Each structure stands twice: as structure tokens, then as C-alpha cells.
Image (cartoon, rainbow over all chains, first blue to last red; front, top):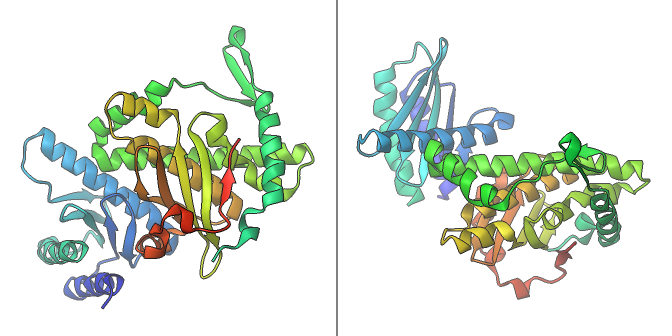
Length: 121
Length: 219
């Protein structure tokens, strides 16, 4: 199985585990899109924003001496964008509605992010 | 496989001449606080500020990934805007469409961002892909002189080139660095959805001398 196929399998696994997910993006930490199931025209910008959120999160964690960056969550009135580090080289971004089971999302997405980190190497 | 028609040589020669003419229109009017080129307002930025101060501030604020993406995004926006502006100006001068579309590829040399751009590979099938080697300019020199990595300078120039090519081909294209050293770096320019796959293609990492029909863009 190729890496892109494994990325898409990881996206399907996350969607199957958590109801209501609206979009998933896997990108490299420098903003290169690796796989996604969001609108095509939005995907390059989402990859860049996810990588920037990751970089900014890492900087904040560093400045406030809170260990290693793990994830950042942005909450709007209608839902969330959650960005998870996938090792040092990858990022997993998930768009979910306000009603999502956030605890379950974190549990499953962290597991998937670790799997993505293994694929990226 | 190279598709020479992608970067038309005669259009390039015409564009080179016209780009030189464009930059000969450059005028400063310090009394009015203005600098103008081709009827368009421009701003002169100190190389040190662009090479060191800006990346440092962005890195401090956003972290390295955010800083690099911001610099790349600025370069790409600039490349797009320059290509649109040059195209409009070139058409007003009676230039061909080929020439109007290629002129912004000469911008990095005219504004001091790069010494040379070499298109090693270009094809349209299964999608537009260009393999471009960029010979560094003054921003890299400034960073090397300060003992710093040249990556922010490379990101900026990669962005400018991808912006110019996006305008030329009329479709979203992005650029990512494949390899680089202190004097040159090689970037792959392709649609965003195909870029990760293209970067992994070992053929694109072949030595420069193995590419036939390379197109050299020099001012």
C-alpha cells in the first residue's frame, strides 16, 4: 500500500470512529498537502493554515515552557478546527461541528495522528 | 519529457527585452515620496530587512513553519501581482500573449532576488509540472554573510516564481523545494494536490546535466 493510500485509510478510519466529522486534512509540517477529504479549492489554504497553527502552537508551548506541542483547538459558534501534531513532520487537522463528542474525537484523532507520524517517518 | 511549448523560447526573448524596457521606466520622485515603474508605485526595501529582520520577526511570532509559509505566501502574492501587472503593461505596449505571460519570470533578476532561473523540466501531462533551479541572489548572500541558513530567502523566491507561473498557466500551482545548497535550489512547481507525489519522484532529483532542453531565464 502506498503512503497516499495509507493516509486516506487513516482518514476513513477517523471518520468511521467519530460521528459528524466534516473534514480531515493530513499535511506536512511545512504546509504540503498529503491527503484530505475537504473541498478541493479549500485544501491548499487549509494545509497552510494547519501548518501555521502547528508552528504557532509549538511557539506558544515553547514560550510558556509547557513541554512538547500536542494539539491546538479553535472553537467557533458552529464547530471546531482541531490541529494535532503527527510527530515532528506532520499535522492532522479535523473540522467538526459543535455537537461532536470532543472527548471521543481527541481519543481517536490522537491515535490516528500517531499512526500518521509512523507513516511519515 | 520536456514540452518546449510550455515555455516558448521566442516569447521568452521578447519578454526579456520588454522586461528590461519596463525596468528602464523606473523613476524616483523623492519630493513626492514615490518610486514608479511602468506607471505602478513600487517600494524599495533594504535587503537586510527582507533577508534577516522580517524572517526573524515572523519566526519569533509564528514559529519556523508559520514564518516560512508566510514568507512563501508573500512571495507568491508578489509573483502573482507582478505577473498580472506586467501582463497588462506588456499588452498596452503591443506585446504578444506569450510575452505578456512570461515577463514576470524575469522579475527576480531585475529586483535582486535571484541571479538566474533554469527550467529543467516542463510538461502538461498528466498535469502541469515544472522543475526549476534557482540560482540565489542577494538575500541568500546577506544571510550567508550573517552565518544564517538561506531557507527564508529560498522560500521567498520560490513563492515569487510559483506566483508568476500560476498567472502564466492560469491555474493554481504551488512550489516546494526539492533540494538546495548555498548557491542554488531546485523546486517542483505543480498543482497543490499533486505536489507531494511529484516531490517523491526520483527522476526530478537527477543531476542538472542530465536534463536536456533546459530553458535558462536571465535578465
